[in-house]
Length: 248
Image 1 (cartoon, rainbow, N blue to C red):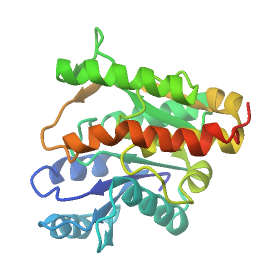
Image 2: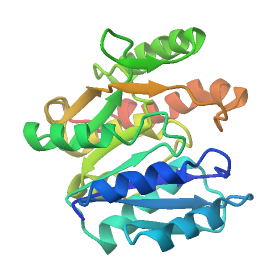
Image 3: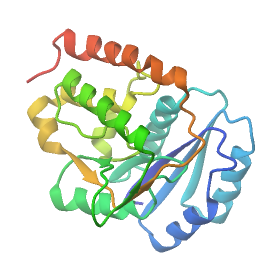
């Protein structure tokens, strides 16, 4: 398996489209999925257990206690990198707001560019099917502009739930628990700057404009989480920026 994609799952019984994973895995022989059950209280665990019996490249990891998306992804990344040592490893939202068909584009971009981190970027444009609520898009642009200013990186869309890494890099970035529960995507970039320096990150990270993306109802993010976002951004800034541990 050259590529393993982590799928964090928390109460995804009604949103997990098993058929699409089965169809994809049958035609992409170098790719596997690791579903991480993050202490779900519905039938998510049974669904991913059933999937694992239908194809050996559909695996699962069960976490008894809910720890949040950041920790579920982290545990999945570390487990997959240690158990199978793939060339590439990434994570994808379970609701497939970014369809599985985009994975091949990410892999090709990484191979052709030689970069170590590819992150999805949602841009409404001619020739692309990027569908989202206007109000949410406006808030997203305001948030992205704020993030870019706070961490001093020219990012456009840190929060797209589709990302791919060289496994050697992922093992370093995900080694320690995150201080942010929902904004760990931003913390990942701050960690990378801390690890390798600003110029390296600008050269090695590529924001890939996805061809398809659609908003899927049922997000686990609630209003209190949005209200906590400024506080979480400040925590990230204090740890990685204000202490001036980032190399320029």
